Length: 146
Ligand code: RB5
Image (cartoon, rainbow, N blue to C red):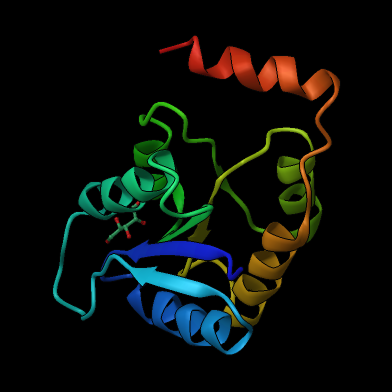
């Protein structure tokens, strides 16, 4: 079965988001495009919520959010119960956040990293498994913080 990914972006991130969708579809993933789809200025929390709802409801396995820095998207996404969003800029912490935090949303900053790097981080994020074990308890504790 194809892994289903929800993607969302604001005006600063929509070009990366569109290119990521094309790449993911070409590589056998199913994608839900939550917008935005053009350069007109929009508000990133709206798109973070659309993606997070699809992940929270298990309609999608993972979410990817892109804004200028990735910071606004990660702040917004982490306000949703059950969402563990990680802002990633390099591959090592991208792998670790899957291994240890079981992160389910990847946040990227289109004004901070190249598209090639964004692609690399996406591949690392989607191909790395959660370690479970002692990390299970810690991840469960996160939802109790709400
Ligand atoms: C939009 O200008 C910018 O503020 C947004 O993309 C993001 O970087 C916010 O964190």
